[in-house]
Each structure stands twice: as C-alpha cells, then as structure tokens.
Amino acid sequence: MPFCPNCKSEYREGFTECYDCQIDLVDELVDDKRLAELKKQGYDIFEDWISIRTFEQNYEAQQLVDLFDYNGIHSQILSQADSMFKLPGELSIIRVMIQLENFDKAIEVLKNQEQN
Ligand SMILES: [Zn+2]
Image (cartoon, rainbow, N blue to C red):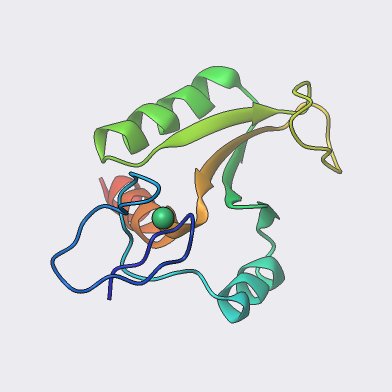
C-alpha cells in the first residue's frame, strides 16, 4: 500500500501522490522497529534523515549526491559547520543525508556502484 511519508496517510494501489501534501507516496513507511535496527547498525538518524555515508572531502560527498540525483534520490550534504543539526563527533566529517524512505533504494545504488 502506498503511504504519504509526510502525513502518513494510506492510499489505495495506483495512487502516486498525496492529495494533502502534494508529494510522492512511498511503498512503506519506515517503522520504529526498522529505525531502531538502523540505529543499532550505527547509522545516525536526524528526524526523517539518515546519514548514509560520511566523507572527509567535499567533492567525494558531492559525487555521491550526483549519483543519488541520477537515480532519483534526493540527498543533501551536511557538514558539521552547518547549524541545521547538532551532531556529535568529528568536525571534519561530511555527511551525505537521505530521507529515510529512500534508504533501501540508496543502499541498492551504493551496492551497484561498488560492484562497478
Ligand atoms: Zn500527505
């Protein structure tokens, strides 16, 4: 069943956009159990965003953002200098953040990339 990742409304099959939020529906919501699992695996999660990879160089992070873009995954670069989130750890670390609902798709993209 498609869901709206924003308001969590459930839609019937065939719907692709939430009427209220005007954003794309996703196949499944990331539930609390999955969240706990990801946190246990060491992923940093900030609200609806997950830090999928960390880099030391900005251009490396940018390459990944471009790759995700190419695959239709919205991502953003977050460095410790930004004030959007208060993050623990290294100041020099640059994170590539994606939205939680894209996590599986992003992992797939990373896997394919590593194979090539
Ligand atoms: Zn909605």
